[in-house]
Amino acid sequence: MSLRQEKVSSLVQEKLSLIFLQKVLDPELGLVTITSVKVTPDLKIAKVYISVYKKENRDYVMEHIEAMKGFIRSELAKRVSLRVTPELHFFIDDTIDYVEKMNKIFSSLKKDDNKQTDE
Image (cartoon, rainbow, N blue to C red; front, top):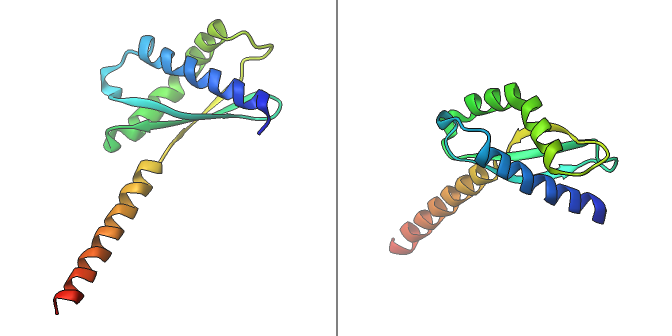
C-alpha cells in the first residue's frame, strides 16, 4: 500500500468514526467500531471494516449501514477534501471472532495437557 493510500485510509477511518459517533444515531445499532479502512490505489473505493459489539445485531447493523450508505458518503465528502469521495463498501471485521475461537482452542489444549500430566 502506498503512503498516499495509507494516509487517505487513515483519514477516512477517522472521519467515518466521527460520523458514526455524531450522525448515525440509532441506539439499536449498539457499539459499532470502524476497525480499519483500505482504499484502492485509485482512491475511488474504500473497504470499511466494522466491528459490532453484539454479534446477534450484525445483520441489522449491516442492513442499516447499507441503507444509510449515501448519507454516510455525503457526510464524508463534507469532511474530507479529496477530488473524489471514495465509494464505501462495508464489511464485518471478524478478527475478534477468530481470536475468541483460538483462545477456546488453546484453553481446551491446556486442559487436555493438564489432564495428561495428572494421570
